[in-house]
Length: 334
Image 1: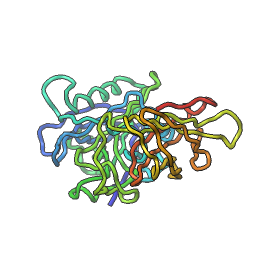
Image 2: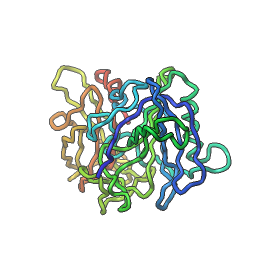
Image 3: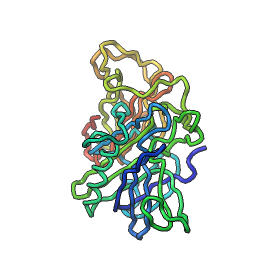
Image 4: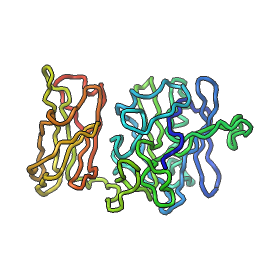
C-alpha cells in the first residue's frame, strides 16, 4: 500500500534539533508557513535495517523541470497525486539525480561536517538565516492533532511531515509503504542566488529497480550503480532544433567502455514513456547521434529522457528544463 497522504510542504525553517540517542533517531526541523501554521519535519538519519547508515546526496545547483510545478513559497501543505506530470518525486523515474552519486553517512559523530546531521544543519541554518529562502519538504503528512502538543518543539496542534526519503523498493518489512511517484526529499530555494539545492535520502536496503505500478523491488534487478560503472549513457540532446515543426530532435549516446556495445534490445524513453527501439552498435569510446522525432517527444517546456536495457531496466536518465531548451539549435549536454 502506498503512503496514505503524500504531498509537499512549503514554508520557512524557524528552528532545528538533533534528536538524542533513540532506536529511530531523526533530524527535526520546525517549519512555519505564511499562515502561521507550525509543522515538524522528521528526517530519518539512521535505518532500522543494516546497513544502518543512510544514503545521502546534495545537489547545490539543482536544475529540473519539477521546480516550475511547485506551489507558491510558504503556501503550506499541498497534496500531490502519485503520478508523472505533477511535482511528485520519483528517484528512479523522475531522473532527478545520478544514484551513483549517493554516499552513506553516519547519523551523528563528534567533529565538524562529518555526519548526516551536520550536512542537514548546514543547509537548514543557511535557509533560516536568509529571509527570502523557501523550503519544500516532500513526504507523508500527519495531523493536525488538535489536543496534542508537538513532542519536540511544543507547538499546538501537533502537525508535520515524515518519510522524507525514498519510498519504494523497500525490504519485506516495509514493503507496505512502497509506491511510485511518492518519494521524499528536501528542496531549498535561494532567490537572491538564483539557486535551488536538493537533498535526497535513501536506505541502503532499498532496491533501485522497482515495479512501475507497485513500486515493489524487482528481485532479479541489480543494485544501485557505483561511480564510473556506466558503460552506456545519454550524453546530449538537441530538443529545440532550428526551424518550424515538425522538428528533428536528436539524442546522443556515449559508449564510455573499452568494448563495442550492441544496442539491439535497448530503448530510449521520453517523459510520457513513449519508447524508441535501438539497433546497431557503438564502438569503444564513440558517440552515436540518433534521430528520435518519429518516436519520442522532447518538448521545449522541459522533459526527461531515459535509457533502458534489453531487460527493460533503467540504466541512465537525464532531464532538462524549459530554460535549457529555450535556445533554438543549441544542444543540451548532460
